[in-house]
Image 1 (cartoon, rainbow over the protein chains, first blue to last red):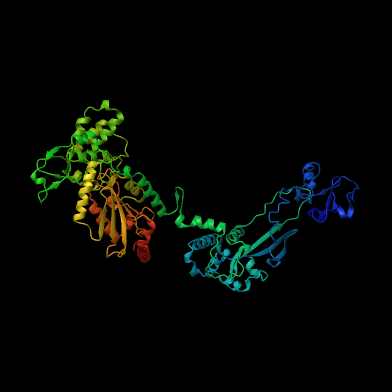
Image 2 (tube, rainbow over the protein chains, first blue to last red; image 1 turned 60 degrees about the vertical axis):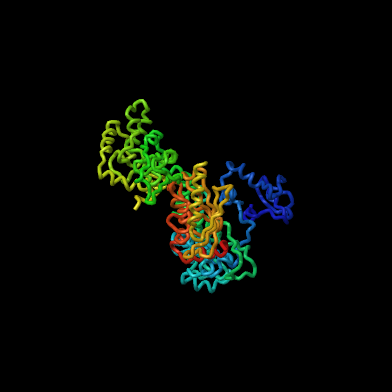
Length: 487
Length: 152
């Protein structure tokens, strides 16, 4: 039985291959007919691509026979897996430099090199200066540069830019040309895969070393996965980034502008991922700009949430009323409510806020019902400590609060900013710090009393926060949180 | 709302008495909450020579809510959104920054000021704002180009 040359034979359409189920011989039907020449058995079968009795049998016989060297490949489920069956082999000239080296007793190293030339897209063949119209090109370039820094200089020139070639490849560029047969010198191929720019495109050099170790047929061997080194993986990646060789338009000379750039899908994917203009994926962003966009979007969605909260109805009702006096009129002897722009006359009743700005009761009431700020200067009408107590009492239940309403209804002579959730960066004192654990009511009263006494210090420190109500707005808080305290 | 209607009419009168230079307000008696504003690009700005159509919309809650400004004419500006809305939202026009005493006439002045000097730090189009800051030449070129293309 000499199955060696036949084991690997695939059934060909011209000649029927016959398999003997008794002795597992394989032979051509046109040579020996349907009777096995080895054992004269007629338990034979013609091997067809759809039904190969050999593999069935091997599965069945696994336990009966000790695997032999020649049968081992069959047990590999991928022994017939040839996804590149339809792909034409590289040109003969592309394969070169197969060298056998004895590395030890019985050990051999086989080194082979395959050159493959990828055709360029017109875009990539352009001069670097012509590429400005294509935003994706520099991205791929920088990606190539990044990979280059990972693997060292083995990758040689990156995609596209013909100006980044190293010296050695520069000379090679001349020799490479379009014909794959003129192979680079061996010194170049030693270093693993190379990508060169040649006038017609990029040449990728795959450099693979196989390790051959003598088999011990009597003992099982550990399965050795073929290991591809990183350089080869990257070279394949760059190969994939290039256009398919078949896509080259005949007659198109590299460097000719005007050809619509056709993106390889993989290259397009990378370009899309790395393009700063598209630097966000859902809620995930890569750039400051995209982050800003999302933040402003959030702020717009919460436009009303930015504003200070409303003043309570009691506080609004408790604002002092006063008659318009002559002093309140402007220099031209006229005055108007700045909300409705209606003129007011001496003797009309208006509502005065703690900041001494005055409006029609109805006008300012509508405003305060939504924002606890003076329409002019944005000072709140409710005292901060009262407000704290307010919220606390709401939490604790109204029953425990006896002094609240009367306290609340009297506007403090020295109101502090009434911004719920404010960080209160400009104030000092624990009562202002919303991040502290809530105080007991006794402590609160103490602070209240302190706050009731107007101190120049207090006045000073609270004014910056009150001039602009943005002190507690969400936008401000986000900004502060992200970029530190405002200047 | 009667109060806001009254105020809008008053403000219209005020604007008529003191229309900012290069502006024209088309006022529809039937729908006083939508003003159409025709504005010439300020002479000292990049937008000189352009004619811009804007719409000023008063919300029903006016003056408690800010009016909404949108450019109907396409304009290349860091503070105007580069879409079909052409919205402008900054400074006093922000909902949280608006206060009732603000007046339409000051809004109109704000728009003019912004055309003369964009505010890239409060931009609605960060890309344009960055170009304004880092590559002013390119920005000016595009802005002028857009004036020629859209605002003639």
